[in-house]
Length: 418
Image (tube, rainbow, N blue to C red; front, side, top):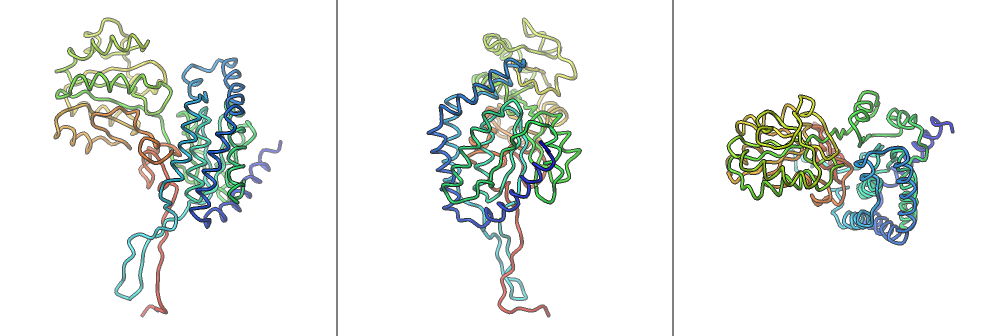
């Protein structure tokens, strides 16, 4: 295959589809989403069979358990895909909304209209359900998209792509509105991120190495989804029952996700009360603890933490633990070592909680809640294109609004400038 020509052809088709997608009605976009959900419902067995091929290949290639977990299309995840499509169909359509319309002294009216970004390239690894999440949001926001999943999920992604194409066609929309790259050649990524004439925005979802490469080499705008070095801080005024439950869920609910806690910070005044109980729970789950000197003194079994542990996204049953002297040290640690993804405080002190919200520089900041809630579905976005850790218009879980921009619109009635 001539990868350069192939990607150029995809780009040309996507640009043509984007022009059509930008002007279709909300009803037609919703029809495509509902139709796609129905096709996936009818093709559950085919999706599971395709995913089984990827899982078998992944095991043979020695994929780690966390990566296999991300790759798996379980019945529950297929159901979530279907529900996500229906939920996105039920969301308000941001396209065409005019905000802040006001009269100017000249008599003209000036406002801002929400418009699609155009063609969005999305590069991701492992999780085939991302194909549906990304496609649904791009369809509803009036964008065309080119999806490049990981080679490990090629069979799953192609099976899902067929479902989406059928859904689009049933609604009278161009099947090229959502295109899934069929080649596993890595040159496809290089081509996708260097086609500004066809691609308006690239959203990479994957490991740190992938993000760094795309940020360095891209010739189009990048909405970055960096690694998830997420923290839970147990404050001196925490309800320890809540702290136990939240800290356990944030780490062990799923290991292979970007919103999983990787570092636990504990105030020194409650460390002796909470850490032994947490150690017992983590041991039952097989979680390896890497502890600072102060926390190690309170644990019966752990590994000494190194500087690298504070900046590592394990995506595995490994947890770094540090005892801190109070709120200031906890916030300083998070802002220095975190990835600006998601951080949570457990406290019953209103003032302390508000201070944490204000001072922690992350895309999601929480009080008395597990970091696992940092998710487009849980935030009511229906799905997410990714979690942006950039400081741009799209920050945190990127839903419909994050896939649109604004343009000024001016309403006049023969007005001329004097």
